[in-house]
Image (cartoon, rainbow, N blue to C red; front, top):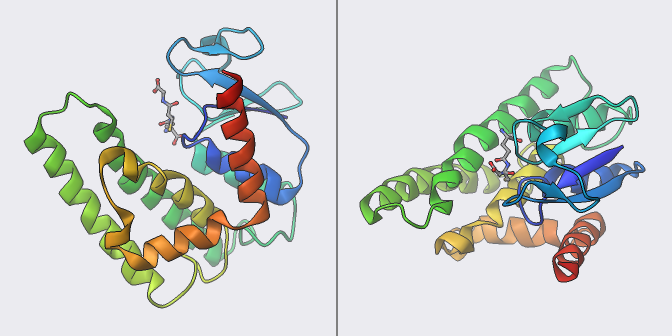
Length: 204
Ligand SMILES: N[C@@H](CCC(=O)N[C@@H](CS)C(=O)NCC(=O)O)C(=O)O
């Protein structure tokens, strides 16, 4: 399998999941500005949507949408601890979390990447995001991870929470979220994924 990624974006989530599951994969960097891949291809021919993550299977099929990619990967390793079995009620709960993260947190952050956004509009998006962060923090008051034990939803949320400093949002306003993020950052697969992505930036 090949994972097309851009450093420290949402593709960090499937990258961590691949490492957690011990699956073999090639990691190919995409320049999100030029849409060129590190191995010299036009990324638009691989994923015409033009964004990471994209997972190319050994069959040649291309799978996109991070929340779906991570579930596909987890299902390759039956009995793994990251996702409840497909078809179970707990799996539906996982999908509820993944959809919340993609629609409310990931997409909630997206407009804030535009530096030219007028200040009142930025504030509107930030206030909305703060309500979501409050909700996450309330959830983590009762448990260490979103579904009780560490899994796909935590890996995705970890990846997008990493963007907040870029928007001038200090996660320390939510101490439970700060501790949660630190807990996940200390996990071996997460450290390896972060190191690999940082090293790819150093290479240029
Ligand atoms: N709906 C997609 C969104 C993916 C996405 O937002 N990718 C960003 C990085 S986090 C990207 O590559 N953006 C580049 C672009 O849109 O040109 C998913 O959930 O996987």
